[in-house]
Length: 373
Image (cartoon, rainbow, N blue to C red; front, side):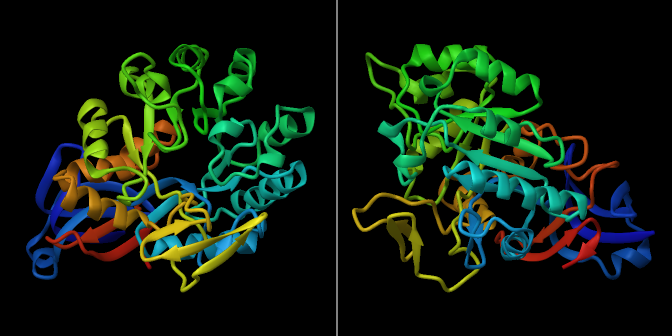
């Protein structure tokens, strides 16, 4: 039996004091009152669940599109682990069918090897809107074909998240993907409110990076943003790097949707966890300037945000409590992906993916399935 004792523990019933996590074979068996002996060596700070990031394009100098291999995934996962991401979906940006298949093979290898932090894959595209493509390569944006369907519907690649533009696919396609167990999110879309509503009613359950690369909310056309805010059951990813979304817009989304439906995501590129400044990307390049990534024409190109940075920004700049920010970084994305039985909370039966933060929300320690990193 392994134990972790801390002054404060964020449980499903809120923050509890002087508690001990009892762990067996990487799983939390119980959370109980600490003994006198344990209290003598308890850790100062707060234990919170490890972060779950559903949008990780790269890290450690690696972009998944460039190197869709298991070794590359290991590098990416290690880069993000130091920032508290204990579960992630490697994300493939719009690319050709061969790269999609190679990415699926890499994730399949990771799943077969029981990699401790890789839970599946996020295909962001290629079924998107050219009008809202962002940095996605327009020549690869297309409608679904049998080769992509075979890759998407594989049963050996863990949890699958697929971002589509609803105007680029049929409602029957969305229904088919959902029937296959794929989580469908809407993004890179110029669709009308009505088109987005139809897609949600067909089974889509979330939005990829709310506000960014989607039809805006206006007085006469609510757009995708309006639908995201209005549909109570829809989840929304939010990039809180203060470049993608104005802090007050982020604050509004959290106020409207709540911690149960807003999930923090990084949209991280290869720059996270590395000293990389310039990255070749299809027919352009992505350059880091401070905490911002852009192409030469100024287009935002993913982020160099890490999950702990997102939590710090949310707590310090949006006046959100650690309890709520933790939920948006762990519980909500785990629930969105149907992984809530094993991830996202500190409770009996959950993987012992645990973070220790101090009173200023600095990250102190990281455990993955009970192992201190």
